[in-house]
Length: 396
Image (cartoon, rainbow, N blue to C red; front, top):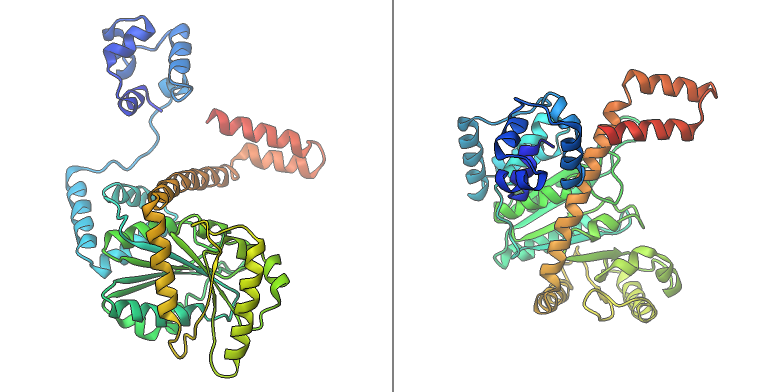
């Protein structure tokens, strides 16, 4: 980090920092402008005072290539933001595409756009998971239409697993939500997981922010349904729903599934026709089993309800439970505290993505390629190679 950027970030005046360095403000200005290079003792002091954020390299190296916006581009970005605020589906889709893009320029533009967002704590973020075939899409379609009739604007982020071999995804969730996909008060966005674990896509959190900025107050995050790896979606929603199939196993089987422990509400779906009786039995078994595991996020037993997405039955109980859950969380300030924690989790998640991107970029460096050859020939141990690469990254 450049010294000038650090001082702005910490809101430290040049005069104050110069005093800490025991130099004149004029000398400090010359160091910042590049007219003079700091002496060794001053470099050490700066490094220590900035906790390593400003290193000697920051005075030596040229600025990395960046995409600074000129005044016209800033104006265009603000117009783009206004279109999102007005609910433009076209601009909302473009914003999410920018966010999901792996191009460096697109990432910088999307970050500048996200900085304009004010945030919305009046929305309800609902995570939905369940095994493939449990009826997640059908549930969202029927429940979403019911919420729209109540006056809500509903958005769906559907995460589709990407092929390990081709990298592609089907992204066909819209076809299973025919009514919702054409409703003017709904927005459905399928996204590829791109190999990301945790049941969600890499930038799902940022996509949620876009939807909230566009005025959607009910946001469903439909996971891939990969079982016990759904931890990330739990940490980015206000309430986490787990859909189960009727006759999906006895109560002990329910306890073994780690995903159940994260559920805020368990919904036994497909409670219709011949399966209705089985759904009621499954509901009773889970209610019995739920007593011997941890309480939900509202310090009460996890709710267990049955519903039929096909017959549109049981949704009133689901919605009543969600409202009660959110109301309790808001009254004891857990709701806003959780949203703040989600911001911190998002920050560290983005740091992790940046680091992974950097590591991926250096893998093509010549010295890394030489390391790989030496490791394959047993001329260099794996641990020594890791240490050399780690030291390179730290210095960068």
